[in-house]
Length: 100
Image (cartoon, rainbow, N blue to C red):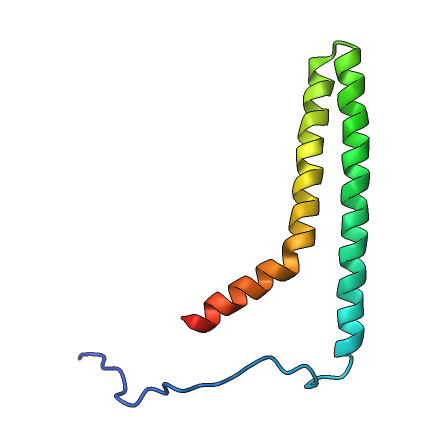
C-alpha cells in the first residue's frame, strides 16, 4: 500500500494575531512590559555586582574571583541585550515565519 497525499491541500490560510479575542489581553501586555522592566533592572544590578567582584578580584590578585566577575559582566550584558531586544526579535521571527 502506498500513502498518497490528498490532492486538495488548503493553500490560502489567513490567520493573524487577534488583539481582542480573549479578555485580559491589555493586562497581559502590562504584565509582560513590567517583567521586561524588572529583567532590565536585574541585568543592571548583576552588571554592577559583577563589576565590583571583578575589581575586587583584580586588586586582591585573585584570578578566580576576577574571572568570575568578568563572566558575570558578560552575562549581565547579554541579559540586558536579550531583554531589550526581545520585542524586536519576536517581531523579526514572526515576519520571517509569515513569509515562509
